[in-house]
Image (cartoon, rainbow, N blue to C red; front, side):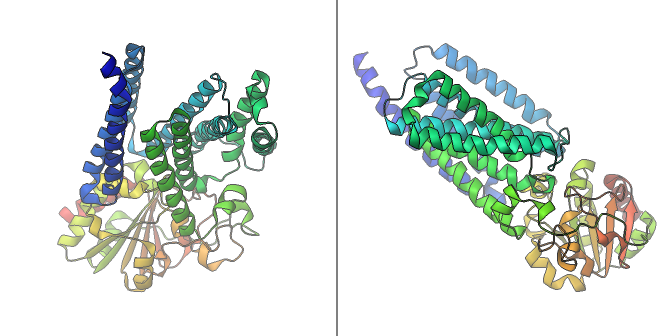
Length: 460
């Protein structure tokens, strides 16, 4: 028994290395559609192995297993019941739960009375990142679900934003000026309150149109917090997994910010509202509505069609019907592509996930840089619920709040069909002059019903 207890740390570290390799391999495989499912399985297996081996040598393994089982049941129920339209909110909540876990780890380590400057600094940094990630993710969830509607210029937003900066200043003071005062319960309690309220102030002033970038950044924060927690616990697999999540989330954040032609600082601390001098909020002319039967006649004679999905497709759950329409167009001799903007939808890769669920081939998905140069030869561009990512104000109106943001330039196509329920603006709150252009036809109604009508016309 003594020999076994001596070898437990060695066994755990070897197993952690195996789990880390599986993590890295799994994440690498997520980069391709053909291996993404297997990569997801490997990553989940790595997490299971890491958690299972951690249970060895625990004084009360029953308590630990109880927590694992409860978490697995809750997570499974959420994942099985969540609608595709609610995936962004679920991702935001899961980011928050990751931040909360590291926040509690740091709180627990504080009770062990850190004895060195390094340990004390790690406790406070982990606590701050975890706390900000948790409450910030809750705010992101509220914004994405549209349950939280507080203007970024409101007095409440300014109060919480001020608290966020105070929390950062207090954190720096705690680390560099009086690192060991943190062992005072009162001092630590103040830090806890400030970082939790500061997380609200971090996300609250960020505009709704920037939420995909914020989700990616919060995901990175949860990984960084996990890596710091791994340093606190001397847990190698937690360090590796946290570093992978933190680095990949940060890289994705930079890529998405670049896709919007904005800096991360502008997104987090300035936003759309301050990026221009004026916003186009009023209608700019007459619209040209079209019926399903008339739209069918145009599509039937089109040699090339570009489908641009947006959040409206997710709301209507129309991805399977869209795939069916695409297949019917191809059978009719039409070249069909799908224009995917990096920030379309409410989370990174939202449209890719929806189309993959509908078994749309990855080969027909194209980014803005691939389709914009040849947009003038596209016969019909079908915009399904997208708004901000096809708004020509970004290229034509220097005073627009979204001026300079790269878009899919569907307005240069020969004909544009816009499928929308109403003339409402997009998530960024900016009116779209595309709706009033001479080559645009508005197909009003539920996107799924409209596309189903087109499918029926082709079949008949």
